Length: 495
Image 1 (cartoon, helix red, strand yellow):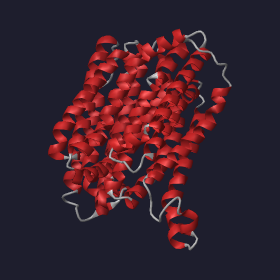
Image 2 (spheres, rainbow, N blue to C red):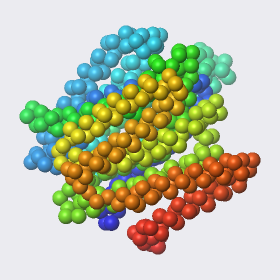
Image 3 (cartoon, helix red, strand yellow):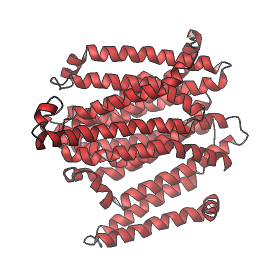
Image 4 (cartoon, rainbow, N blue to C red):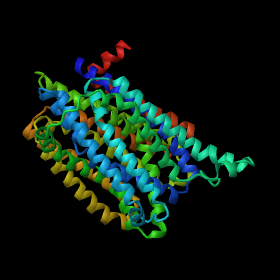
């Protein structure tokens, strides 16, 4: 438990930046869903799907490779310097190509009047990819507070510029005589989708400035042989990452091109905004991954490493299922974070939330092929998931629209979780407490089903009674965990 408490502490610190930042960003969802129609919001949803895809390409698995070789090489400084130089070169080439070919690319994406979108995103992706390695070094050196502070600065700048460009500038333009003359070059009196991207770009540029001390203080040293070994290790992770992003974001692209043009952008906007409700799950997974990857590698030499890994997964599932219940039992309150015109998509929320439970378990299980150096298996699993995702989306989207994308996420992550567990038990067996893990999953799904049957049918006209009943259900879940987990009871007694 000491090791797990250490991991929890690191997760909490990383989570401060991730959770606070994401929650503050989350406050932009009500803004976007109220000032933009679904067709307009779809542009934002689609473009950030491409960002996620290209970030994976431009980092090409080098974060994990850095952690691996930073631990094993005699000269960790050379590992860091080589990695930084490699990402600088690839990011610079990407930015230059994006700016030069912004016009043709914008036309290809059906935004011929907005080539600036492509230039913005080339810069955002290039800067974020390059700064990922200085951030990785902060994680490796356990400088979680500095990591968190830089992330928070990024978020604050991004949100502030969103509020200024989408609310303040249009207000001043429309309500003051000097507005059109002074602010006409920024806005014509209404919010502009492109300003979301501009705010992100400025925030990413500020982050580059803040991490420069982590870059300029190193003694430049490049090793081609080391880079080849790192890329050889990381390449399967690149395939894994691309496949993972394809599973996560390909639906945004396919919704646009597989549905009739008169409804495609509308459905994409609905799907993308309702997907944001699952952000709490994503926040925890992200914070956990930041802390867990270096933690798992550090634990590898411990005699009880496998026992620690087993406990980590069990407690992870407890938290994820608790989050699932907390969102779904109070969905009548949570739904107000998006505009009313997006409520038709709320039916996909429970499907997407449990997809995130499966995804988080998959990330936990994936440690076996990273520790054993058999990263090709991660690539195999993710390529299978990506192929299945593309196939199911192509089949389901024309038939049931964005519901097909939601069910595709659920099926793909569920199967990837099962396959990773099966292979892990063959090559790096860990005695996970499968019975309790499935008991917690089943209980959370069962309590939500009870809520739907009782609160939605018998208490349909009384919101306060629904919320009271659902609170009792959540308490039942918490008490069950406390009853079955002695360590949880001990922690609660200390509190």
